[in-house]
Amino acid sequence: MDFKEKVVLITGGSRGIGKSIAEDFRNEGANVIITYKNSVNAEHFDSLGILHRMCDVADMKSVNSLVEEINKQFGKIDILINNAGITKDGLLMRMSEEDWDLVIDTNLKGVFNFIKAVSRPMMGKRYGKIVNITSISGIIGNAGQANYSASKAGVIGLTKSVAKELASRNINVNAVAPGFIETEMTDKLSDDVKQNYLSNIPLKRFATPGEVSALVKFLSSDNASYITGQTICIDGGLVM
Image (cartoon, rainbow, N blue to C red):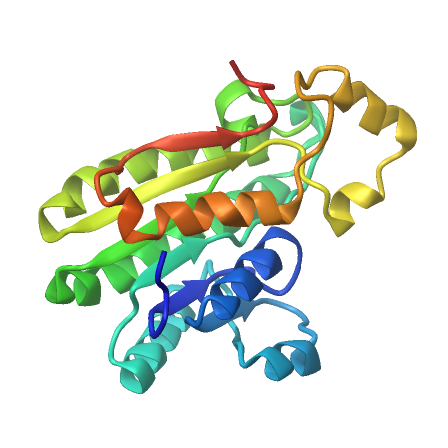
């Protein structure tokens, strides 16, 4: 897989899975740009040569402005990784309209915004790779996550539709559905909760962000040029 001089845009790349993906692409020689909404360890990313830009993925004007800036600087965007996402968990009967809208706007509308913004330039180049980070919650659902599961299920449907629309222009669109991944967010869970998850995972362990990143890189490479419209679970066998 050769990513030298490729231009890679990763939303929500300041921590967790997004950060791992950004660092891996940069190590492969790619020009990497990440987005963040609230805060970023600028010194860390500057030291790696990774550009970082504040952007609200749910705001189309902000998204269009960033994509225009990148295209002016690099002349192209080869790879888009839609990773930005949030949770606002709660039982449906107690979930506020605000929490529903915020998760849908970020996790689903944000993916729509970025795909719409990059698709025309990619079509002009007749080349592009788009990988959307969804979740197994979008496949099997999860109690207390009606908003999150709905948003991630929406990403899967969006992936399939856009893959059909862009295939004739040599643009591949796929989704990756992680299960339980070792991140700062999951580190805060109690041992009992972690053990409950582990008991349902055939491989009896959690994935690392690097394992997700490896799959994302493969789908972003020319080795995967005949794969499009797919949702690939990386969950240790949880969803079979």
